[in-house]
Amino acid sequence: MAKKIELKTKKNSASVSAFLNGIENDQLRKDSKALLKLFKEATGMKPKMWGDSIVGFGEYTYYRANGDEGQFMATGFSPRKSGPTLYILPGYQNYDTLLKSLGPHKLGKSCLYLKNLENINLETVKKLIRMGLKDLKKSHETDF
Image 1 (cartoon, rainbow, N blue to C red):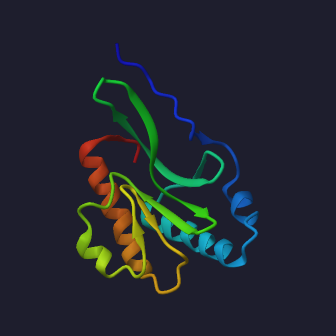
Image 2: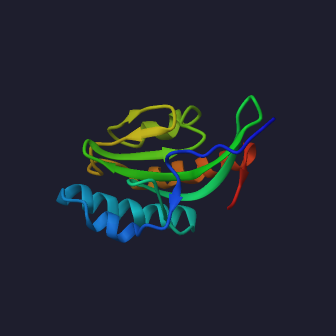
């Protein structure tokens, strides 16, 4: 029988502003505030904290092969010590052309790793966010 999955990283009521203002590294704090503005513009959604360190926008429902279901943020970012990590769900597999104009980065399945926003094309980031949301909406139940 299918069941609802409770993830460790859940949406909560913590303050996004307090979290970002509490970042000790000046450059990372500045980059994170710029990303907050960019994600708000690209999504038209209000940010929510997910776990202790992820700023997320929107939600989607996913189903595992066994029928279990869960909810997770649709897109977001996390200011990591190594630099900002951007989450675009369902992933970056189909965005090769756009990624060529992004600037220096590394990729995981659904993670885009940046050292900072220097030399990053922020308009490309906006396009990636919007395309990711559009693609996610095609394949999953969403709240946006």
